[in-house]
Image 1 (cartoon, one colour):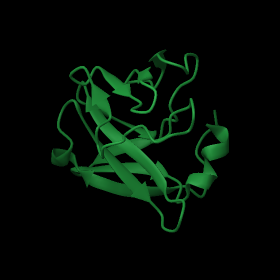
Image 2 (cartoon, rainbow, N blue to C red):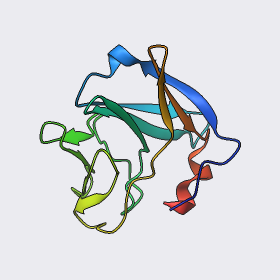
Image 3 (cartoon, one colour):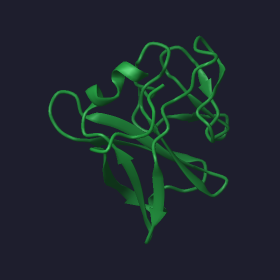
Length: 130
């Protein structure tokens, strides 16, 4: 897995806090062009978590239907391609073909009623490390 965020990662305003209720997830894109960075935020236990929208198994996007990341009443993040399950609080794989790997976590802050994520502007900035 890659180390800490590169110094050129930017803080992106994703949504308002009220747009992310408990046990919900929301995808986002940063950047432009052919390879924008895609991630998602989720709220669980009153906390907000953010991850790159990349399965560590085959590097597919996790959601085939926009914003459908969570299953079992928000207990797990699921990769729609191969069914891998991940712990929402840690990104750790608990079932599926990529046991021992985890999702790429992103720094996230909830400030002044907004959810802010530190992320790159291009998928190419992180894809080789996942």
